[in-house]
Length: 247
Image (tube, rainbow, N blue to C red):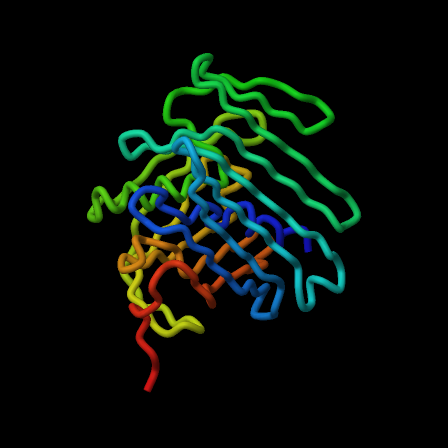
């Protein structure tokens, strides 16, 4: 059941193009191998002084909730400069289960470093310009797609786990997705892994051009074959009139 939370970490975690879009909230249903596993709520808020906040809350439900009742909260603060996300802070909190977890990352762009505090062993990590964190990278993916809708491969440096990871996102074929809101045309993307230990994991996203490439579906397959699927089922602040209802 621990793999349930891998989905939340990957999820889209950042599904918001801060400039040019209204604030919004999106709600996703999560299934594990076809069974109800939880729900994900994400919210974009515009703050003062050019700051934007993106929040994700994942709660176990259904079969998974029988075994663990964890709630995972992620919060990102960032600004946008020339269509590039500039992270300021990332906060991860897991509570309600057998073991709580806390992680905070504070970015110092004058020193090109990030301070990481897990309340056990704080440390600092050197970073390069354009480095992102794992909750916000898909904001940059959406932004890049809006700038170049035909681009085939996207590469991102991610500060995560005390080191810099490299995410490579490759475009696949277009596909029409059925959701509780109706059908919508999407572009399919797959995230490639940068370590041998992760190569057996697969993450696929379906992003809707008519929603500024908001992901409407995510699929994550773990090493043991456990599959998590998240489907958009409610959207506020962005028009859902682009969805086609079945006759």
